[in-house]
Length: 237
Image (tube, rainbow, N blue to C red):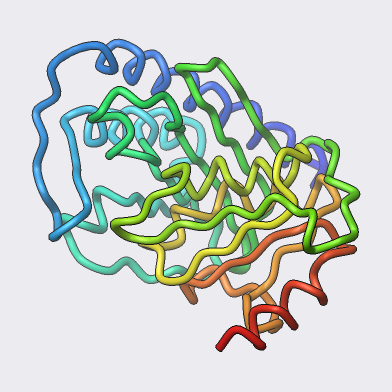
């Protein structure tokens, strides 16, 4: 099978998995949540766990030889090493705090990496019924940093609450800039990273270095703003 055909198959099956998980999220969104803490701040619900199982089971039926990394599995079992093998990286419910509070900025994030490089990404907000994939899209054309809409995530001072959806905001032109330091793990960015790139955006380390999916540091923008943003961030230190 040609590479493009393979990627199309990967994408189609990932979309199916995200939609199945989305049905489960919609069912739980308006119900009483049973919440646990997996740290001082991070929350986990029965829906997080159920959706991760659902997604993994669906993907494993089609790709039994692939590797799998999920936020909830990693939280329960410890760090899972990302290798060069085809690896599905899943955040079954990005924005759990939003989900618990009934704030509809939540999503399923599914990414496939090969050689540690994201090649397929799916981000699906089932409450708003909004689906983002790696298909070419539109990136903001804003060139002046002072006029840009910037998004970030800071503990205890929340903005949107979803790293994956913020990356998709860059891809579709809603946001001009997004950066985040110290996020949970590769599941936060694996889906959105390829969507940004395929839409014509740039993904990089906030220091200006190349993006590393394992570094827990990410910035994204349209190509016209990258250098100005890096310079501004360095001057603010």
